[in-house]
Image 1 (cartoon, rainbow, N blue to C red):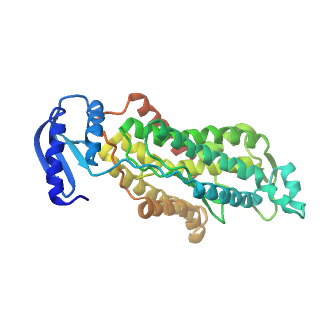
Image 2 (image 1 turned 120 degrees about the horizontal axis):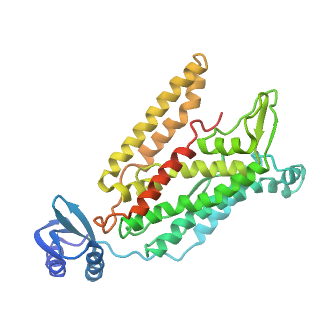
Image 3 (image 1 turned 60 degrees about the vertical axis):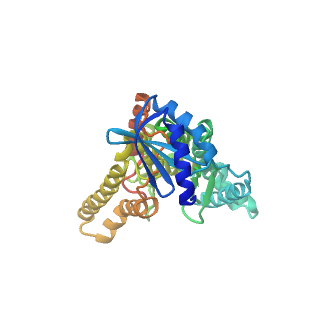
Length: 381
């Protein structure tokens, strides 16, 4: 934050660079932020390009917003961020995550070729988890590369993916990419957000088709079994492959199909239209200032689904409250994680005036449909 006297001097210099782009009706200094309000004389996209070049020497970045019947050009003291070239942490986390998913993959049997390695007394037995680990890492890796490549295409400053290893469950909590600069406009914001899920699904769909082709229907074990809960998508794909499962039988899935199921779940959670999630960015690109209300409505819907699921399972289990809560807990967990860890805030793009294209609106609807299809009512039963 520059000293107040410097801000006043800079405000005058910025105003001179704005006047031929914006008919200034009002100006205001908010701390270190300078705001000019008025009417644009050229289209927002062109105005943004001019103002970025003009504000850069002063260490400021322009944000174009709609405020009532006027346009506000907000000058923030933000310099362009240079992405560090150090990739040692990224590589280390990737290697550790590969190992953690490989170990987690040992819990998923169903591949005769790799299951035979479990009896090995050497380190080769860990390769039994390779079908699951390779498939899941491919889905997550392509997902993050979709974000990264698209962000670089739009000249946004981003980091390489940071994979997150976990010593339980699937062996990973996914991966993140750090956005070090705001998106230029809603179209680029939408493309960067949607590229990840769509790229990951381009791997997940062939994986589940191949995994189901290698799966089989077997007699149910006498002691029962634990299975992933079906979403509308996975149930439909399994039904098309095997038809109705006869009583006393179960679907014994190949580890590749299990990894695809995990990929669908991670993608669905990312598509929740809340905060900084992929779905939250998509919601901002589509609905702008209404995105916060959409995020809060999403959390409210998750809580309602949780209550409804609990009541339905409570009745179905003959009044077993513990079993009913266990079957509906995922809805409450998702609502809590979103509220306390993700939040509802989203950084606006530099150009918040230019509308999103109709084709992207259609893709946004497709993303919402995919969220509904991929989200399982019960995660594990």
